Image (cartoon, rainbow, N blue to C red):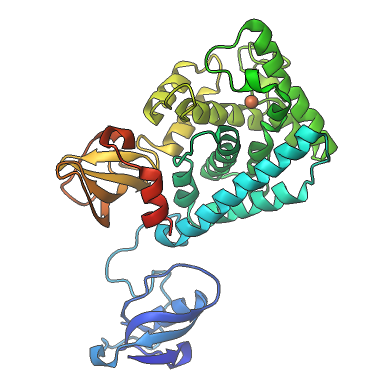
Length: 398
Ligand SMILES: [Fe+2]
């Protein structure tokens, strides 16, 4: 094995790995350098030093003198996948996990300040939302996956964080501008901040609220508006937060806005907030599967939600959302880590458990698009007595 600089790389060499690189673009790091175009591509991707295996050198096919550089993946012997992943899932997931934990801490600190009537500094949530969007840019599936990993008793913290992640992901899916993605992430992160002003016996009441209690609960939007205005957030972000419980038919709150009176951001946050609330485990109820949440949202459209947006959200999240568990027809259980948009029932899954042998398996990525295996059904960890959160922390997000 020999270390060389990118300037020394020539066609005919075999690259064993990347030693030094600017930026964090993920590239296929092993393979033959068959032509010059590959070298210029590697240079463009910020590769500085590589490890080559001299024993695997070969004679490259003759090239025309002035080869047009191909916008192709370097070192690639198999066709590149059309992908939104600049960084591999396995690489981004530990970063995403840290961000996820950090998000919960920031949320906790903000809620404490609001509870004590202290001012909340905008800098912290703003910087955090930017980092969150950065992670989604690198690999949207890492944070999306974490929206499925929930702890007991952290609903308010996780819900706000999840709404931020899901909204940013949704906005990206809709091809919105970078600035809009950031704004939606921030609005999502702050949308329930007013809840801390609601008395605990109502906020955590297991079961249905009485009309009287519901009226008090609804004030969380009012407290939210006051807090966000004090933080100095622009009017349209305050409005997004203020509209998260408005519904198209005018039966939402606090203002009973109808149809076009609700902004695009407001319609988006309403869908995402409802989706996460339905799928969340609460002290008094188990979360519903995503498929059921989608059904509810579709059923309540176009009455309450914007039908077109709900349909797009369903496509964005997928039938088997990233982070959810599925069982294959061979009894193996895995977690969805990537959608195949054109084949929604054939995602990429990380297999880790055999339901037949009741034993963990070596973790392996399986792309159902190419293999023979099929999804049998969606499952939950509790059906198999699995402490999936622990396994996830120890083996996947390490
Ligand atoms: Fe809310």
